[in-house]
Length: 372
Image 1 (tube, one colour):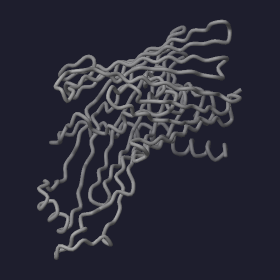
Image 2 (cartoon, helix red, strand yellow):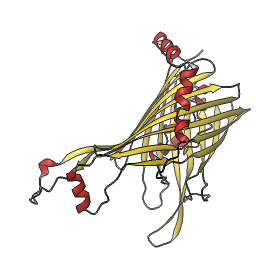
Image 3 (cartoon, helix red, strand yellow):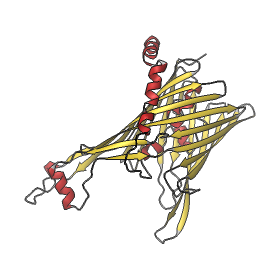
Image 4 (cartoon, rainbow, N blue to C red):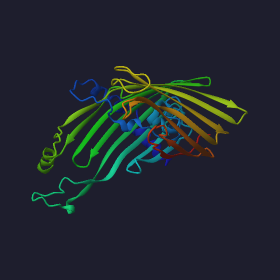
């Protein structure tokens, strides 16, 4: 397996090929296009991955040092302590209506560089299509009901390189595919870049997402029957369009503490800075808004872990037309078995004032051929 991997690496990941993969989106970022720039675009890419990170409320860009770094901060791939590492996660939302799946693999190319592949899917399956439920004579035709899926998918290729013992750089190129059955679909492309810097017991990070702006090109395939349904029901017939996701920047810092030889504590904090206009977050502005999050991780002998975090501050109006605030408290546990297998669990989305929405998230990481 390793021989095949090294052959694959040498043939396909030469410097010229890697540069072409990662910097091709820069050409698209400079093309002037008339497009929609909604405030919440490609939001499935903002959910987060890995029960460890989610248990710490996503305060993770300076902490990421495993295969999930391909999502959080690709620079962290240089800190993966295995030649090959696999990460998997599955969770369900809205009482099992929506499925969220994630998988990633990270490789150490050499002592200074690493490569990662990431796949995410957020989807709702078996949605009834009732557009032909009533025929031209007004009869109900239940035999004509079909089902379809609406899904958001992303594939990321990550490359990271260590410049020295303290500084690492990383970059993502991502391909996005969003579908709503056979009626609508979009292809998108984007670029992320991240930095991690280690100083004594501190780690600092800078992560730029969609740094060239990420675009989704939407196309619609509506037959005459579907157009008629849209017209009768008073819905606007959609037209092909281009949707732009504006850049965001995340600043992160973390520090580790060691007590009594076996008890360790990791504290982290992130500042998520969006550029798409005023949001109902802690620090609101136009165009810049700042959403902070903090996380803690306690470990015993680096085997058993307890985690907690707070973030996602929101200000909103109640039915009584009063303004109120909320924050989400997340928590989790983890266990590492022989430095080969890590099992993590997180209980997230516990901060709602009116309705308690709990999401149980499970993930694992598996090391192959761990370095001596």
